[in-house]
Length: 432
Image (cartoon, rainbow, N blue to C red):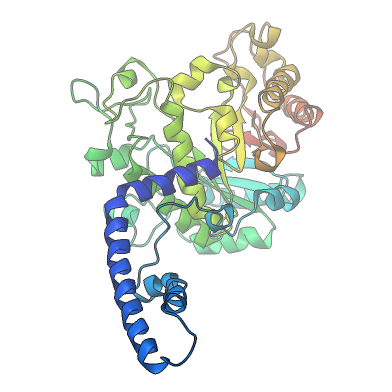
C-alpha cells in the first residue's frame, strides 16, 4: 500500500465513520434549501408576476448555490459520494521527484547524543570539513527511549520527563552544523522504547504472563499497532524539523522478534501476512505530517528482508512496499550480519566488496517494478567496525571501508552512511 492509496483509505474510513452525520447535515441543508426556494418563488411571483421568469429558474439558481450555503453554515466537509482528487490529497510542501533531483547526496556517519553534546563533536565536524563526508545521523531519540536534548513541557516527551540533556544547546549545535554545510538527519528509534513503556504502560507490549516484551539488552518495546505511539514519534520528528534538521530517520521501525514477541497481545488480529501494513501505515502517517513542513522521511531496515518473505513476516518490513512509503530507505547490509554461505560467500564479513555489491544488486532486482517517480532513494548503512564474534572475520580499516563504498557506486547507487557504535571512524584514523 503506497502513500496515495493509504490516504484514500483514510478518507474513505473517515467518510464511513461519519456517514450518518453526513446524512443528517445534508437532510437539514435540503430542508433549508427547499424553504429558501419556496420563499424566493413567492417573492419572485409577487415582484415579477408580469415577467417571463419561471419558478424553475429561481429554484435552479438556489440549487446552484448549495455549496455556498453549506460553507456559510461552517461545514467544510468532504463529499460522501465523490472520490477525493489527487490534487486535494497532496496538501504537501514536499515533492519526492524534486527532492530526488536536487537533495544532498549523503555520505554520512552516525553520531550518538553524548558525542553530539561533547567536545568530541569538534572532531566530527572536522571530518566533514576535511573528507568527502557531508552528513551526520544524530541520535534524537536513542535506544533507551531518551530524547537527547530538552524538549518543551508542552510536548508529551517533555511532560513525561523523557528528555536527557546530552546536547545542552541544541539550537547552537544546529547553527554550527549549518555553518559547516553539514546535512543533518535526526535519528529517532521507534518502537523499542523502555521509557515510554514505563511512563505509558498501556502502550507497552506484554507476554501472556503480563511481563514486558524486551530485547536481548532487556529494553522494553511499545506497540507498533497503536496510533498513540505513532503520534508520539511524529511529535518528536516535527519538533526536530522545527529545530532545523534536514531529514527524519526512523530506526527500529519494526516489530520485535522472538518467541515471547510472537505471543504478545497487540490488540489487533496480527499475522505474518498483515504485520507490514502497520509499519507502512506508520511511515505514511508520519510522512503526511512531515511533508507539510517540506521534510523527507527515511527508515532503517534489516538488510536480510530484501527478497526474504520469512523475515518480512517476522519484523513487518516489506521492502517493496516501504520503498513507496518512505522517501529514502537505509538497509543495514553490514557484511558481518550475513551468515556463512550467503551470496555464495564463505565468510561475507571477509569479502566486504562482494557482500555489499551482492546485497545492492538484490535490492535493485527487488525494486525493478516500482515506478521511479514513487521509488525511495536507497542509501545503505556500511560497516565501519570489526566483528570478532564472526568466525573468519577480518579487521576493518580504510581499505575495507573503501571497498564497500566502491561496491555502492558499482551497484549504481550514490549514497551511504557509516556505522560505528562508538563513533570511532576509520576516516579519522581511529580503527578498532
